[in-house]
Image 1 (spheres, helix red, strand yellow):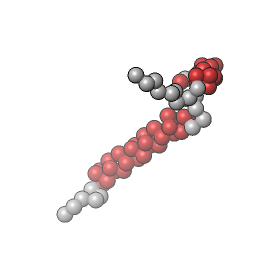
Image 2 (spheres, rainbow, N blue to C red):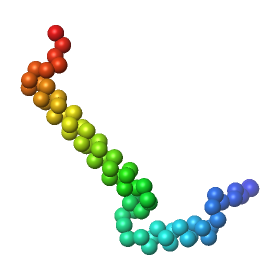
Image 3 (cartoon, rainbow, N blue to C red):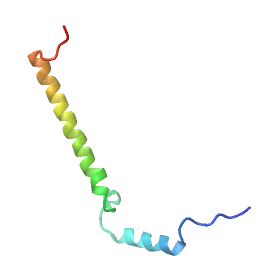
Length: 68
C-alpha cells in the first residue's frame, strides 16, 4: 500500500493545536469570524421570525390580507 502525504506538516498542526488549546473561550468561538456564524445569524433569524409571527397575528386579528 502506498502511503498518502499529509495535508499539512505535523509541526504546523501541533503548533495550531497548542494555539487553539491556549485560548480560554468555548470551542465554537475561537476563530475570528465565529461570532458572526454562531451568534449574529441565529439572533437575526429569531428576530425576523418573531417579526413575521407578530405581523401574521396582527393581520389575522384585523382581517387584513384575506382572499375573497
